[in-house]
Length: 390
Ligand SMILES: [Zn+2]
Image (spheres, rainbow, N blue to C red):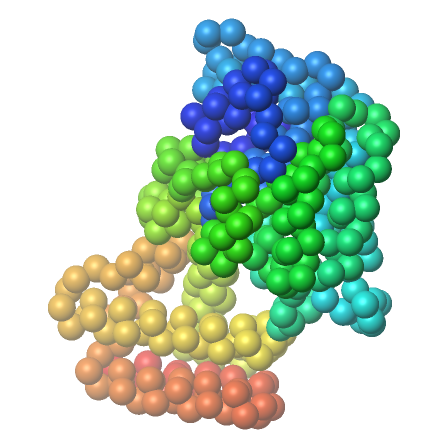
């Protein structure tokens, strides 16, 4: 992970690289901030810069993105650290028993999965995302005594190929008290050339003694301009106004912004499906209607419910437009202009209540595991009837 891959945070990065270049590296540091600000990515890039065999300095002008220095990304050390495969880098993180690791789990059992997850997400990782990746989203995670013991043993060994033995503890707030106390001892009496980077989200959940014995590195929200620039690179399909709204709502948190992006993708898909469905059911084109109903059913129960809630939102927005003449934000999400102009007028005071009642009933039936194809076919006929009674 090079610093240039980090979104924004240029001022902090320049401070960090300056301190490393001056050789004033503190042996225990606490990187704190929401993971969506890039806290883990920052610690990884820090370890990479520290060990890089060919650090890059960009002079007074910087690199064009505001960086004064960065790791090279090419030397053996950079390559190994960026893929989390360096023999002098040890990383521990919350874990739990899974289908494959049924007892006494520890970080050592999940190194491959963790590497996969972190590299796929460029270091922008969350505890929930990590446990989803492991397929254990409902479980509690812990950094346990075995993890602490392994870490202390690793740090006491001689370095293999670099100056520093580096340990990253991701989410130290998930350590139990035993582990935290063990680690504290190592922090207080470090062996030579060891570096411990704690990467935390909730400072107040750490032992005060850990906080007081570590050098703080505080991450703040990503600035809007940098967040917008990154999202617009990654999502050229999203209109700029939508991206702007997402950036404002995400408050400098890239992970949250990504959640909003996938919601907006879902809304676009739902909009297309809705237009299709309304066209077919209005014409009572049974053969094609049944195809669309099959597509809705293939979404699975949770998505079917979300789709119906979306339909309720749209119908209410249409009704408001018909009743007040005010344009509705839901209408803007239809690519099909003809439909967007004509459809709202079909939702009036004479049919809105009936439509809402029918859709709510279908929502209830789906929650009770009714046969979805029958539910959506009957709902299609009911909506068709209501639309003709405007
Ligand atoms: Zn390098």
